Length: 251
Image (cartoon, rainbow, N blue to C red; front, side, top):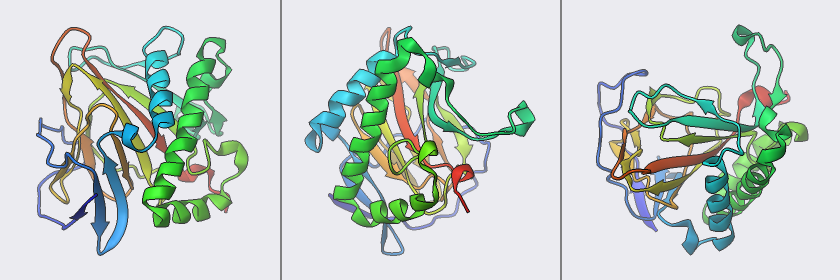
């Protein structure tokens, strides 16, 4: 795998700014280092590393795009259908009159059982891939998760999952995530371009090609998702994301 040393650059990007379309400059299997420490990696095609994970993600992607899985529909700012689905632990949100943590209601949907099972197994398979390619990241996250109660875990390294269909994102930082931990972002993309993760601190834009996997500490830097552009009818980009929330850390 190619080594990429992340070197900070000056830029004017602020949280809340919209992402412009940017061509990716990380397009091959890569390891990301910051201050000589491995902090993440990118795999262009998970099939080369885990056929089981590939099959599970295909099932999850197909189920998500069906009517069987409950979804939160989004404003169609891009002119294409946009929605998301959350699994696992959901943090308290007092401003939304939910002052207590919960498990996503999707788990109780009888029609979404195949989706939930596929995503749960995919979380575990992705953890094994992290363990294989970046054992220091795996061990650090497992150590942190010793303080997370089992009922709030989605897999062993995460609390939650979100699947984002055709959703780009303005620049932001995942401040609710556990510091020192990583997200896993797996992409399914057909007949579309864009939807790439861009990190202005380092001038890095990571490809969001079909079957790719990005492992990165989303709490670390401001980042965004570039616009998604369908190239044909039915073109889409879906990301299946596993992430760790600090709201469930048992101090």
